[in-house]
Image (cartoon, rainbow, N blue to C red; front, side):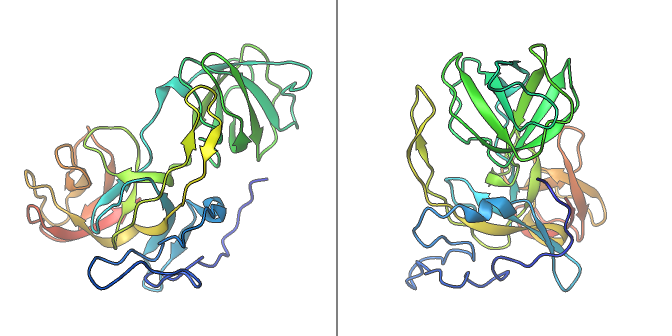
Length: 285
């Protein structure tokens, strides 16, 4: 069950390798950041992705798992791009999955997009319409879903109000799992800025028909700066003055620019921006 806790310790140091991890650094290439994985499919830190940690100077960092592309230092990172095919799905209510208040499983009818097994694990199921609407329940796991097939969602949290066949549900990924460099369009929320290079994870592979996993991957975990002053690359087309509100760039991936309503507010310029340079931003994420 979801719990509230203000007392937590970091799984590894801010800049040092996690104990027991072996760096791939050979002296001829940029070393990976602290989250470099040891070559095993250990996803145990997924349960901490999204947890914030305070630094001793009053800033905050947040733990994330990277997707399958490396991210350079001083760039904005965002949640994985939204998949609208998993919005407002219908559910069924057989005897095995009655979706009654206090229970933990829901049988959902998939659309035309194959759902990979545990694709939304650690994320959320939102009851988006009709009976029982408005609930936000964390996802413990789910089966794969074929085209127009059904899949079972197992929840961390109990259903609060009994659902029925009129209920629509939306699946939302954990925004801190499979992060990517910030896109120039509105595809996902900005979650933080890299302050060291983050190596790429090795992605899992899945059946294109059933969504069942066919091979495990190797995750890479790291911290992002999310509150306080951090270095972020400034957009070459619109460098903000000190103090101005800023948002993610609409022209250069991973950059920031003068705030625009077309992009998410992320903080304020902590210094006068210099085009195409890494500059200080007081992040408010």
